[in-house]
Image 1 (tube, helix red, strand yellow):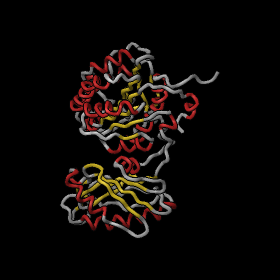
Image 2 (cartoon, rainbow, N blue to C red):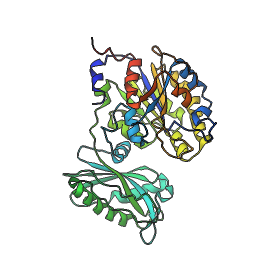
Image 3 (tube, rainbow, N blue to C red):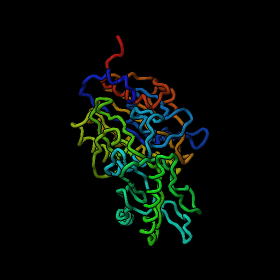
Length: 402
């Protein structure tokens, strides 16, 4: 159990906590003497919280380690991502709302395009939109092999998830995506003896699946990534005594939330204001709200500095609607850094802001940005300390020891 010592310290409270995660928030200046995306953005509402609260920066995994989104979010939720290794397939399947049980093996699928020789020409099938890929997924859903049950569901665009159910399945299997074009998809290969049977079953399924979609103009083949079994994570209610809700647009983030026992909220729209409205609609039913903003990360990966600035500003513009709910604690941070300069996730520390209606200890910083956070009162802390800080500032922890 993460931070097991916290369980004996928990005390009842009616306080409300909001964890607002702008995915890939941290950045770098494009020029040596420039500002980062967050420092460039006009964020008067976040700056007000920064002046009234406390700043710091977090290390998602370990210093110098570039994290994936799944491990980085687990860290924010208080689960050491080294100890709790959750595969991408589990996140995708649960995020898509699939029935994923102990003993099942899940995997994320990508549609791809291959030429007449079976060599990959486009790893994402032209980023085929969901309305075009749904009928391809329907073809895959009809594929069956003896001895196991397989279910397939569209995730988004060119991505789908597969869940295999049967006796004696194990998910220690390498990806079939070679991560480059001009070569054929790889076979599923077990990385330990217990998974050899499962790898062979997936290879049988892959062969039939490719036959079923071979006549598609774009999505005429597929690759599989992130084979995973249910990790059996301890749940938020048991760990922190919280009724927790997730408000997120993208399935993977709904998936990791579901795995730790959060209730995933359904809502229309994909803008920050839409997400904050979903929080308001569920406000009376929960103690803790995880709110995820995806497009900061997307803009960073696209190398779009100005686009990332715009997304940050749109979150700030919508923030008063969240604060009007009168939360007791608000944390604003990222899961990792995604500098537009690098066009990728990075190992750089992540800006972190914590504000409490009653228990904040303001430091000397008045602007929410990387360099201000580096000088903030919290210093540099592991991301796994996020939840203990949230609980303490919400008056939900008693002292440790006599």
